[in-house]
Amino acid sequence: MEKDDILEIDLREIVYILLKKWYLIVLCFVLSAGTAFVVTQFYIKPVYKAETTLFLGKEKDQVSLSFSDIQVNNQLVVDYREILQSRRVAEIINQKFGVGIQEFQKNVNVKTVKDSRLFSISYEDTDPKRAADIVNELATVIQKMADEIIQVKNIKVIDTAKIPENPVKPNKKMNVGAAGLFGLLLGVGLILLLELIDHTFKKPEEVEKMLGINVIGTIPAFDGGKRGKKKAKDEKELQEQYLKNLIVHNNPKSASAEAFRELRTNLYYSSVDSEVKTIVVTSPTLGDGKTVTAVNLAITLARSGKKVLVIDADLRKPKVHHYFGVKNKEGLTNLLTDSKEEVKIKTTERSDISNLYIITSGPIPPNPAEMLNSNRMKSLLEKVREEYDIVIIDTPPVGQVTDAAILAGITDGVILVLASGQTRIEMAKRAFKSLESVKARFIGAVLTKLDVERAGYYSYKYE
Image 1 (cartoon, rainbow, N blue to C red):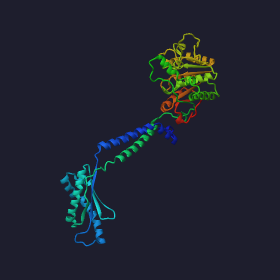
Image 2: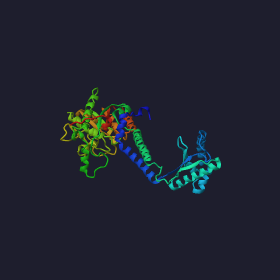
Image 3: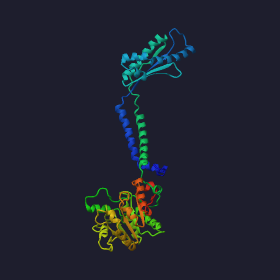
């Protein structure tokens, strides 16, 4: 990844990303905590701890204990610990209870009670009765060995080990809590990882940084009909779905409609130095929103008093007629294949949108690129340039076919449409180079489907 490709994410954006995808954090937390509970409850055997307490007193023939005797007793406790953890004692326990030597040495423990002559022997086992039996046996063993090895008889049992009722391991609350914390961290890490590998545009600043072209429009995501996903079986229902995307016409007071009006204003400013009349609208890939942008921009321009012509030059998958709800029996392909020398323009109009004229694609030809690169197409563009104030030309994605690049080379400018969170930066760069290779004039980029909460735009509403 190049240095320029590194996307900066500030703290507020990180918080927003985490809040937006909170369900992943919850899911990881539930799965981790739930798994820990199930494993702890049903798969890990509980471990019980039995314990006995012993006392180091004085020998029978001793009248009293001196300070040196107490010091000796403290040292004896250390000796007893080593004896109880010795292999000899382990073999005794192994013969009597069948516990492995290493297992015994791992689970036995001897500790002293601070500032006293008391010490305890404990043993952990999955069988609570065996744990108690082993501890009581160790108390007997240490009394015998103390007499045999060290030749002292000053060990007395204070508390005999009882069969433990509650396990000391595993700690269900601690395991579930630790797993839950791990799940939270895992969820946060997963979200940040997904964000890191999501190499798409999110904000206008990223487009300008990666492509070096100005963003002249940011269109918030809006609830439109299905576009190119699952086609409705009923033709009428399909048509209604497409018509919902004319947001400027259907809901002129919406934030998205205002965004298209801002795009129109920026378009005017971009053509101050040189006249821009024929505009190619394209995108790197399918689904970026180029046709939706083209038709809504056309309506916005028409409502400002401009005489606008929309040409559907997508001769592969034409959609303009669907969005405007007009027929597509004859269109651009008919004009380009007409044998008459003079181009006679036949347009379609919508009675409810004044100043707007449409040339649909017409029948899909077998050679779209050749037709768009013909002298007939150049003559058509020259003619419409004289008759209309603005000509919006919808083309196929430039990242997939050459049609848009062909028209970009013979028109006044290009608008590159990118979808926030969808258009991959690599595809956008490839599209940019394709247009740059034909010396296309970039009017600017339009970022559609913008997440307004994340980008911080359009936080207001129009009433």
